[in-house]
Amino acid sequence: MLILMDHSLNLDRIRVAPKVLLHDHLDGGLRPQTIVDLAAETGYDRLPADEPERLGAWFRDASDSGSLERYLETFAHTVAVMQTRDALVRVAAECAEDLAADGVVYAEVRYAPEQHLEAGLSLVEVIEAVQEGFRVGQRRAAAAGFAIRVGTLLTAMRHAARSREIAELAVRYRDDGVVGFDIAGAEAGYPPTRHLDAFEYMRRENAHFTIHAGEAFGLPSIWEAMQWCGADRLGHGVRIVDDIETPADGGKARLGRLANYVRDTRLPLEMCPSSNVQTGAVESIAAHPIGLLRRLNFRVTVNTDNRLQSHTSLSLEFAKLAEAFDYGWDDIQWFTVNAMKSAFLPFDERLALINGQIKPGFAQLKWAE
Ligand SMILES: O=c1[nH]cnc2c1ncn2[C@H]1C[C@H](O)[C@@H](CO)O1
Ligand SMILES: [Zn+2]
Image (cartoon, rainbow, N blue to C red; front, side):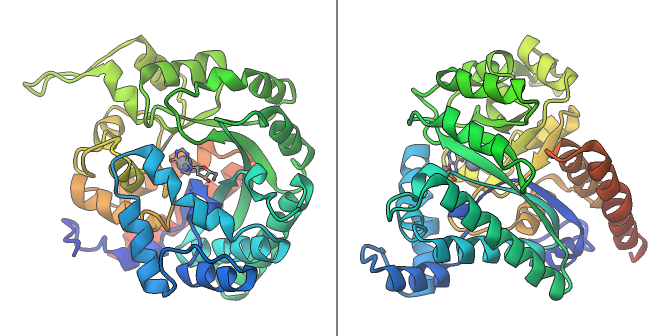
């Protein structure tokens, strides 16, 4: 049970706030019931449980291992049931609906097309199925009174060798809802510079990308992602705190050169508090570096990573942070505006969302107090 210091800031009210989500994996957000249905339809018989509630609990518990590698093993089951066009359309549509029902007004959702080829779909067929699903989900959400806009990020798996191909597809579909590119998967042993070719290609195409970095591996990964690869944002980036000294007497924090560079250039950090606790990147929500980084005015954003594995939603992540750090509406608005400023959308569209939806939405919530 969450006990919030600011009593107006409960989960139901946070749900109503117009929120922005930049880091959410499509294959980490399926409804347990959908996994059960799709497994039955496609003949997948290796699910660890076949009753939705137990299956949801299994994902959460299995992801609580303290290791990113073990956390990633759970995706074998979600990816297994996302191999047909119908399955991809359904999962993407439900993703848009679920985010919209949680009060997310703009989301960037990512997945790795190369993981969905096992039943014979081509990369292009996978991408078109997911885009169709997002269109369906956005329409249904709007009809239910929750408008959401979803942009897609195409991910390449960092242990594999298809990043250039996936980057080219991200550019090819840039006018059809794909807003950027990413790499994900086990971080230790797979530095971002392995995929330099893909990142250089994206830059030459004036296209955006983010890189999972500084989650399970430290500063060298962040430095490479930023200074070699030219990432527009960092997925997680929590280990940037290793370059910040905080005196025990509570005195002024001292930033190293990399931390200063990240803050000076306003590099957006896509933080995912619950996921970081599960993979062992941080010890607890209360010990999460987001508290310090917010105080130091880094360009921090709040995200879900994998709603299924972390048993969470964007509203719940904010509720947990509000409890741990005594945050109020101004803090949640600050994180939200940070996220919208950092989105891979054209500047005028970001501004329109900030001034047309986010600021008025938060003003109304604060005014109602
Ligand atoms: O937090 C993460 N770090 C690294 N890789 C991740 C994380 N969450 C999900 N993934 C992987 C597993 C998925 O199958 C893949 C594409 O969404 O991305
Ligand atoms: Zn992630």
